[in-house]
Length: 379
Image (cartoon, rainbow, N blue to C red; front, side, top):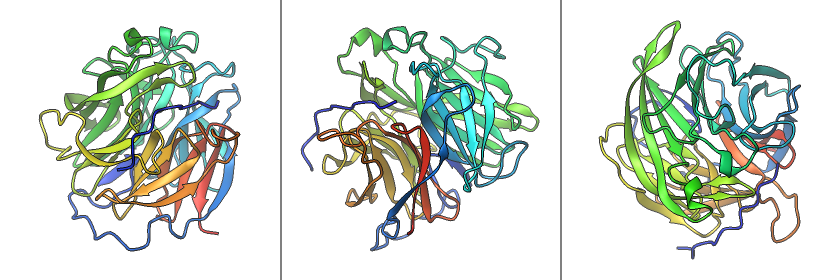
């Protein structure tokens, strides 16, 4: 399903999974290379369709599997679907696993009527997707009953084991429309960074509401039992968000953790990237954080990933482009990933989740216009 992000554009001015690909936790950031990370990446190729047997469409979340665990295979890509076969947003229930060679299998189909805990509103799988040690898959749900924002409810985070069975739901604690996520794990503890886009948003009736948040959820590993939520901390707040008839909700989306513990956030409504400092340790909200860059080639950025050398990769909701930005805010490269549609909306609404592969020489991304997993790689 194509979303149309017709937004006013501002003037130009460790095991880590989810939307990041980083080195060892706590390592110092290397100097920015002269050549952009995507410099040698000039070819877009299709890996496979993301549509499973039940017909779910609108792929959102994208994460590279870090290790072999149960049904999960290292280097394969997990993708979550947001829409059902009738193309209703907030009703998708499937996770598909796609190998780099194009082999596809269904990892999970989640029954909203048979969950191990609460998930207010049901199941509609979002861009919030990560894999924790032990093969625990965490995916966000922002559900609707009819595909419209009027019926959207708080949802939850669903925790699946390595065999694709939902073992736990995480609700409350600030979780309200979990939209995107990244994580970092260290010594039996995982920190999940989750954007939330439903705080007073539906009541706003399409008007911009500055209530979007970023949570840090601390989970304790329990071996064969689902990880336990120890605490929830609001580390970002005040992000603009609004409902949208084509995109359901527009609000803070992609998050990626830098080498120095800075969390980068794609502020979709304002076409900018902000930075929350000391994201791993802070005990209070940094508000919307410090401005990294705005305008320029950014056009409603959605998915975000941090490349191995610290570069910030974002994909635009307003067009079909990927933009690379340095931590200092320099937009150093643009790649067109989707060219469908007609001017002035070429590529609009086609891109959501993205992830850097383990070999650091390719970027996987989902294309909602074609319901496919594609890759940006060397020729």
